[in-house]
Amino acid sequence: MALGTRFRDWINNGLARSVLGFALLLPYRVRGPFVGSLVAYVVAPIIGWRRRILENLDLAMPGLSLAERRRIARRVPDNFGRTAIEIYSGEEFVERARAAKLEGPGVAALKAARDARRPVILVTAHFGNYDVPRAKLSREGYSMAALYRPMRNAAFNAHYVKAISAIATPVFPTNRKGVAGLIRHLKEGGVIGIATDISMAGAPLLKFFDRDAHTALSAAEWALAYDAEIIPLFGIREDDGQRFRVRMEAPLARSTPESMMQEYNDIVERMAREHPTQWFWIHHRWKHKLGRVPSVASEAGEPRG
Image (cartoon, rainbow, N blue to C red):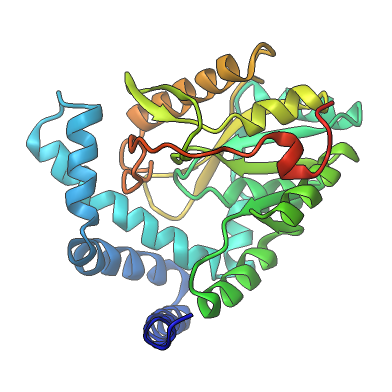
């Protein structure tokens, strides 16, 4: 790593740690709005998030009024900031997550799978606070593992992994060894959670808001290979910004990986339309890029079942 890059990472990590450290000194009910406003009104305009959100909204929901698009462009970074500081809030956040109501047809399906000792894949999205279901379910007796994408900034990544591990363990990085560990947990009858609503270069182009979007098939391939139930779920932030509920959809119908993940895309789209300020419109979701997507076998070091 170049000296300039290391220095920049050191500065960025120092700034982030300073903001997080100050926010954690505030009462819990205050720190979320504080960091949310900081990200919405300072960070987002500087780094171009607000412009990107407006562009994505123009692409996906062109019928929205300008006032509504601007409202969403303010609220999405606010939700991102709240989510970030909540993840760093340890047991204070876990207490709120434990109080979240479980709802939807997937709740019964999850309990039935646990009773049958059948593996479960929970597919979520970068929506609301996506760590709420992990905190909630891990404390209700579910053997919950998660996959995370390591940060490029190694110094920041170290305390980020510590923070998400305080919510629930195990957590696995998105490398060959990490995915192999996740698959092993799944095959042993455990529950895994992954967010798969980001663009992956070279993945098949499926529909999302009637637009082509690269969509990874791994979750559906694993479900078929290891006879796992695959259930979409979402940690929805309530209007007060502090409380949550966990919505669990019916399991995806077992068919082809492409059909299953198209159903997943349709569910995420519906949730984003119902709660447009809670989906992370900052992603380059419709960015088309060629590339090789590893198969289940190469990712997990295991043959397809």
